[in-house]
Length: 225
Image (cartoon, rainbow, N blue to C red; front, side, top):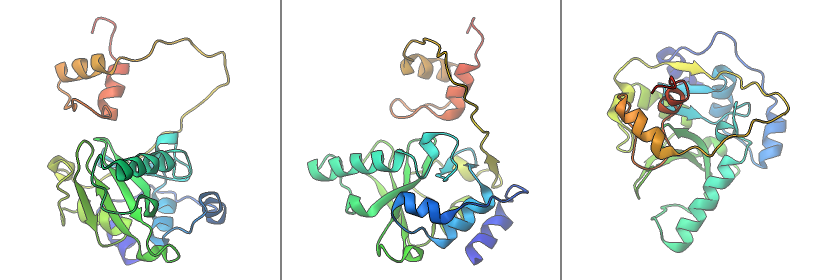
């Protein structure tokens, strides 16, 4: 509870808390969850910290930020491949890593689920978006967020700019969906998005995921751009 108090004092949460059915969530995942994460997800809901850190949530508005969606499994499968083929040095057994958050730059945050039956003792690991680096934090996810957003620790894999302003949380907007007819669209050329974004002042990496801010700006662009 102390970790949650520190985070809410540093970064005010939305006015209304959620009421998540945790027994169902844990049954779907097939594993228990840390108490601090339950409090975090209930108190903040789905959204993003400092326009950068997206904590996966049972009610995530897209599959990319949904804790019970396909992303944790996909990420673990890639780690397992890297681990077995030696593509990148994975410092932990991939079977003990469960993705619980991601960043706009492409880093992933993991619970190190050891011991499996005692989730309140799980630590946090972060992998480099486009390289072999890893960072480990000996504490809960909530304590990690507080330490990073409060400038108490600096994760070498993160840009320094994420803590230049005061800590803030932006709730995610619900994604409305209507059944067909589905529009026919051409595949998006990410090279065009990167080129346009750089020309308009966005910091976009040459590889990996295009930052959400730049992608949304590209989608809102005027035809003459």
